[in-house]
Length: 327
Image 1 (tube, one colour):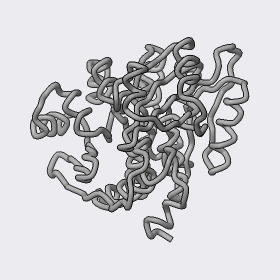
Image 2: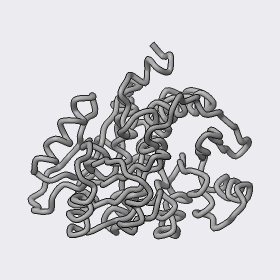
Image 3: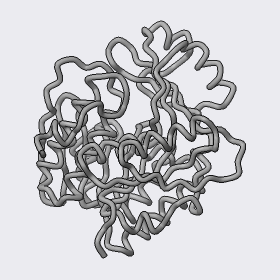
Image 4: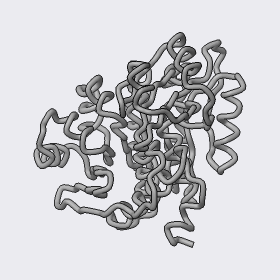
């Protein structure tokens, strides 16, 4: 069966609120630099107030990736959960405006749309505090299996893995994708996330994941080792492809036969690293869905990551297809 979509993403549907502060703000608020922390409603209100005015953008890790796929010219769909509130309506509008199919099943809940409060320090590092809201309630009934079956690749973000219902949704979507001859991919998302869910991540990766995304720290955390070589040897036995990002050093693409190093794209000035991994996955998955060689997949990922870290916000501001020289 021909695929109607190149990539289908499933993850948290969140609105990003981004503001810039110095290291003293992190200390005053007790924030761990570079981490992602889940927060409750009261903490979200207090921190939002302390942050002051910020830029509001539709976000969520997997949604950023899917938006990147669309910017490359790919056919993309997204499965996420928002409320019937102003932020939820804005969220759906933003996805559809860039050509992404939003496979959302509205539910009768009073839980508000989730948001991620992002503090960017002068070194461009981002510290994220996430109020998941209704996005965390996504379960098997929220997954449009017809959409999943019609995607060449289904892509999961690790951030959604905190509830059992979400884990069930991922396993259901993975099985559905494989039943229709599709590929399954997963982003580890954050080393703190890996620490919380290592056993379940490994179960999903060993049983269902074809393509794994993660940075160096996340992969080391997953296999509880300080040696990248040991982590690479371990991941080799668990999935077909592992794409490991190394920041300014580029990325490694690991298969059962080879380890390919791909350089990073030059960036005039790094402004905000929010979304770098998300957009790397976008370029890689777009290339993979088009049956491009793995080296080209990694190059497209590097192009997308370089674009997004050159400005505030986790979504591209220019056509990635044009930027990558694909027109």
